[in-house]
Image (cartoon, rainbow, N blue to C red):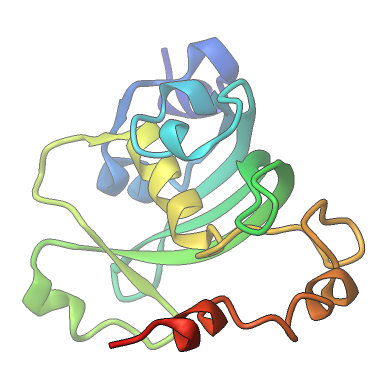
Amino acid sequence: MALDTLCRLMLSDLPKTIDPIRLARAGSRLEGSLETGIMERLAPLLMTPDGHVDFRLDFLQDSDGVNIVESECCTALSMQCQRCFNPVAIEIHTHSRLVVVASEEAARDIPADCEPLLFNGENLDLARMIEEEILLALPIAPRHEHEQCHAGTRDSLAGNRGKNPFSILKNLEL
Protein backbone atom coordinates (compact mmCIF):
# COMPACT_ATOMS: atom_id res chain seq x y z
CA MET A 1 0.00 0.00 0.00
CA ALA A 2 1.40 3.39 -0.99
CA LEU A 3 2.04 5.97 1.73
CA ASP A 4 -0.41 8.44 0.16
CA THR A 5 -3.15 5.81 0.31
CA LEU A 6 -2.35 5.02 3.95
CA CYS A 7 -2.60 8.67 4.94
CA ARG A 8 -6.07 9.18 3.47
CA LEU A 9 -7.70 6.33 5.39
CA MET A 10 -10.38 7.35 7.85
CA LEU A 11 -12.21 6.13 10.95
CA SER A 12 -11.46 2.49 11.79
CA ASP A 13 -8.66 2.36 9.21
CA LEU A 14 -6.56 5.00 10.98
CA PRO A 15 -3.06 3.92 11.98
CA LYS A 16 -2.54 3.58 15.73
CA THR A 17 0.93 5.14 15.56
CA ILE A 18 2.60 7.54 13.14
CA ASP A 19 6.09 8.61 12.13
CA PRO A 20 5.75 12.41 11.64
CA ILE A 21 9.10 12.76 9.86
CA ARG A 22 8.27 10.11 7.26
CA LEU A 23 4.82 11.62 6.75
CA ALA A 24 6.28 15.15 6.44
CA ARG A 25 8.81 14.04 3.82
CA ALA A 26 5.93 12.58 1.81
CA GLY A 27 3.78 15.73 2.25
CA SER A 28 0.91 13.62 3.58
CA ARG A 29 -2.46 14.40 5.08
CA LEU A 30 -4.15 12.27 7.73
CA GLU A 31 -7.76 12.96 8.62
CA GLY A 32 -10.54 11.19 10.40
CA SER A 33 -12.49 10.86 13.58
CA LEU A 34 -11.59 9.34 16.95
CA GLU A 35 -13.96 8.34 19.76
CA THR A 36 -13.47 10.35 22.95
CA GLY A 37 -14.08 7.20 25.01
CA ILE A 38 -10.65 5.82 24.03
CA MET A 39 -8.86 8.92 25.29
CA GLU A 40 -7.71 7.96 28.79
CA ARG A 41 -7.07 11.48 30.08
CA LEU A 42 -10.03 13.21 28.39
CA ALA A 43 -12.80 10.66 29.05
CA PRO A 44 -12.90 11.11 32.87
CA LEU A 45 -13.47 14.86 32.41
CA LEU A 46 -16.64 14.29 30.37
CA MET A 47 -20.23 13.78 31.52
CA THR A 48 -20.71 11.32 28.66
CA PRO A 49 -17.68 9.85 26.87
CA ASP A 50 -19.63 8.91 23.74
CA GLY A 51 -18.47 11.79 21.54
CA HIS A 52 -15.85 12.00 18.83
CA VAL A 53 -13.08 14.33 17.68
CA ASP A 54 -12.77 15.17 13.99
CA PHE A 55 -9.22 16.04 12.99
CA ARG A 56 -6.94 16.80 10.08
CA LEU A 57 -3.15 16.62 10.22
CA ASP A 58 -1.12 18.06 7.34
CA PHE A 59 2.52 16.93 7.37
CA LEU A 60 5.00 19.04 5.42
CA GLN A 61 8.64 19.89 5.18
CA ASP A 62 9.66 23.51 4.57
CA SER A 63 12.52 24.65 2.34
CA ASP A 64 14.99 24.38 5.24
CA GLY A 65 14.04 20.76 5.88
CA VAL A 66 12.04 21.52 9.02
CA ASN A 67 9.27 18.97 9.59
CA ILE A 68 5.92 20.61 10.38
CA VAL A 69 2.52 19.24 11.38
CA GLU A 70 -0.46 21.51 10.91
CA SER A 71 -3.24 20.24 13.14
CA GLU A 72 -6.96 21.04 13.20
CA CYS A 73 -9.36 19.42 15.65
CA CYS A 74 -13.08 19.92 16.18
CA THR A 75 -15.39 18.40 18.78
CA ALA A 76 -18.42 19.05 20.98
CA LEU A 77 -18.00 17.70 24.50
CA SER A 78 -20.44 17.28 27.38
CA MET A 79 -18.79 18.51 30.56
CA GLN A 80 -20.07 19.41 34.03
CA CYS A 81 -20.98 23.07 34.57
CA GLN A 82 -19.00 24.36 37.55
CA ARG A 83 -21.91 26.60 38.62
CA CYS A 84 -24.93 24.27 38.52
CA PHE A 85 -23.24 20.85 38.04
CA ASN A 86 -25.50 19.99 35.08
CA PRO A 87 -24.14 19.00 31.66
CA VAL A 88 -22.90 21.83 29.47
CA ALA A 89 -21.95 21.50 25.79
CA ILE A 90 -18.44 22.76 25.10
CA GLU A 91 -17.36 23.23 21.49
CA ILE A 92 -13.65 22.96 20.81
CA HIS A 93 -11.95 24.09 17.60
CA THR A 94 -8.16 24.01 17.56
CA HIS A 95 -5.53 24.93 15.03
CA SER A 96 -1.87 24.27 15.81
CA ARG A 97 1.37 24.42 13.92
CA LEU A 98 3.78 21.90 15.40
CA VAL A 99 7.49 21.63 14.60
CA VAL A 100 8.98 18.18 15.01
CA VAL A 101 12.04 18.41 17.29
CA ALA A 102 14.38 15.78 18.73
CA SER A 103 15.06 17.51 22.06
CA GLU A 104 13.89 20.26 24.36
CA GLU A 105 17.01 22.26 23.46
CA ALA A 106 16.00 22.18 19.78
CA ALA A 107 12.53 23.43 20.76
CA ARG A 108 14.03 26.78 21.78
CA ASP A 109 14.83 27.60 18.14
CA ILE A 110 11.36 27.16 16.65
CA PRO A 111 9.31 30.16 15.43
CA ALA A 112 7.06 31.91 17.96
CA ASP A 113 3.87 30.89 16.13
CA CYS A 114 4.73 27.18 16.46
CA GLU A 115 4.69 24.60 19.22
CA PRO A 116 7.28 21.83 19.61
CA LEU A 117 6.38 18.21 18.93
CA LEU A 118 9.01 16.12 20.70
CA PHE A 119 9.88 13.07 18.59
CA ASN A 120 12.60 10.68 19.73
CA GLY A 121 12.40 8.35 16.72
CA GLU A 122 9.67 6.07 18.09
CA ASN A 123 6.29 6.31 16.42
CA LEU A 124 3.79 8.61 18.10
CA ASP A 125 0.40 7.39 19.34
CA LEU A 126 -2.14 9.15 17.08
CA ALA A 127 -5.01 9.17 19.60
CA ARG A 128 -2.74 10.57 22.34
CA MET A 129 -1.54 13.32 20.01
CA ILE A 130 -5.13 14.36 19.17
CA GLU A 131 -6.14 14.06 22.83
CA GLU A 132 -3.32 16.43 23.83
CA GLU A 133 -4.60 19.07 21.40
CA ILE A 134 -8.10 18.85 22.91
CA LEU A 135 -6.85 18.89 26.52
CA LEU A 136 -4.89 22.07 25.85
CA ALA A 137 -8.03 23.78 24.52
CA LEU A 138 -10.40 22.83 27.36
CA PRO A 139 -11.72 25.63 29.57
CA ILE A 140 -10.38 25.64 33.13
CA ALA A 141 -13.91 25.83 34.56
CA PRO A 142 -16.60 24.85 32.04
CA ARG A 143 -19.93 26.57 32.67
CA HIS A 144 -23.14 27.71 31.04
CA GLU A 145 -23.79 31.31 30.14
CA HIS A 146 -25.56 33.07 33.05
CA GLU A 147 -28.91 33.07 31.21
CA GLN A 148 -28.73 29.31 30.56
CA CYS A 149 -27.36 28.16 33.91
CA HIS A 150 -29.63 26.31 36.36
CA ALA A 151 -27.77 27.69 39.38
CA GLY A 152 -29.45 30.38 41.47
CA THR A 153 -29.64 33.79 39.87
CA ARG A 154 -27.85 36.78 41.29
CA ASP A 155 -31.19 38.24 42.48
CA SER A 156 -32.06 35.14 44.55
CA LEU A 157 -28.60 35.14 46.08
CA ALA A 158 -28.82 38.85 46.88
CA GLY A 159 -31.80 38.24 49.21
CA ASN A 160 -29.60 36.07 51.43
CA ARG A 161 -26.82 38.63 51.74
CA GLY A 162 -28.51 40.49 54.60
CA LYS A 163 -28.34 37.46 56.90
CA ASN A 164 -25.04 36.92 58.62
CA PRO A 165 -24.52 33.20 59.32
CA PHE A 166 -22.37 34.11 62.34
CA SER A 167 -24.94 36.42 63.97
CA ILE A 168 -25.90 33.69 66.46
CA LEU A 169 -22.40 33.88 67.93
CA LYS A 170 -22.99 37.36 69.35
CA ASN A 171 -25.46 35.84 71.82
CA LEU A 172 -22.87 33.51 73.31
CA GLU A 173 -21.41 34.43 76.67
CA LEU A 174 -17.76 33.85 77.23
